[in-house]
Amino acid sequence: MSMRFTERARRSMVALTVAAGLALGAVGCSGGGDDDKKPDASASASGNRGSAPSAQEGKSETPLAELKGKDGLLLQITSAQRDAGGFLTVNGQFKNDGSGSVTIPAELRGDETEILKHGTSLGGATLVDSKGKKRYYVLRDTDGRPLTTTGLTTIQSGQTIPVFIQFPTPPASATDVTLQVPTFSSGTVKISG
Image (cartoon, rainbow, N blue to C red; front, top):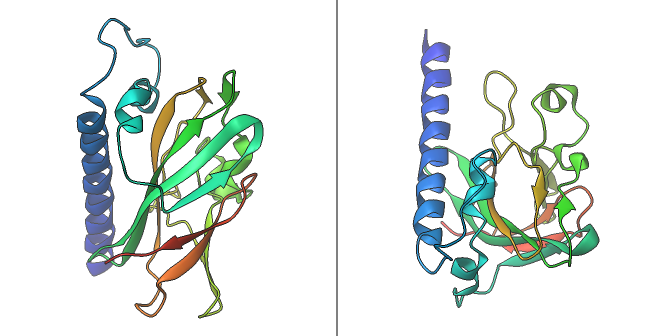
């Protein structure tokens, strides 16, 4: 009975985190966009939020880390926050700095069978605490789905797409960790909270 409650609580926490991320993404992109451009109705929700890069470019904050991928694709990390549920949520955005559209690499999901069957995601990402000599893998829900942004397909030139990844939280002594994402360079991320 308590295991079932824990699973429900974890699912609720994930749903709340995703909803909060979507709400923040919608608020962040609501101003400064080009109102004359109409989003493609068949595009994914994450694709629609990323269609107004001018809202993201207006931020004066520099990313905590910038991981470089192929064909001008960047993964910019904006926060790595511990929360009360024992999670570490890494937030960021994909940005296409190239001149043409880029397909999000399928290799990002890693090679674990359980994650592969849930489509394109950031399920292959890991965090490395070199001081504590530990590697942390992406959390999953009870159905084996990775607790990351999913359904990633293509990104147009100049477009940004907000993303998140959840890991088990490293100990409080771990303040700097290395984020590793397949097909991207590694980057050091400072944890807050």
